[in-house]
Image 1 (cartoon, helix red, strand yellow):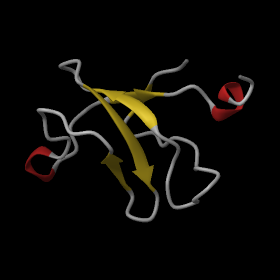
Image 2 (spheres, rainbow, N blue to C red; image 1 turned 90 degrees about the vertical axis):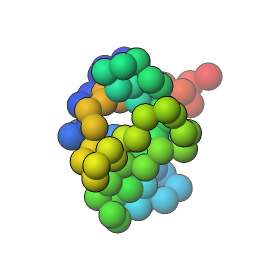
Image 3 (cartoon, rainbow, N blue to C red; image 1 turned 120 degrees about the vertical axis):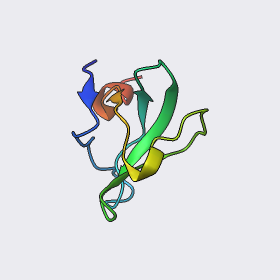
Length: 76
């Protein structure tokens, strides 16, 4: 698996071209989250709630993301 910066976008979801596939995210404090990129609004969205605000003071806080490409998952 490769780690990506939050300035990079994941691949588009096969079911809905407005959103990316779900990815695992981690901020510098080690908090994990499940998120996706909204291509329509050009911003990150998150499925889970953590003790930190990813858009603190209206600014996207740093995090990295990763995922197993869907082609690899479909093999199982």
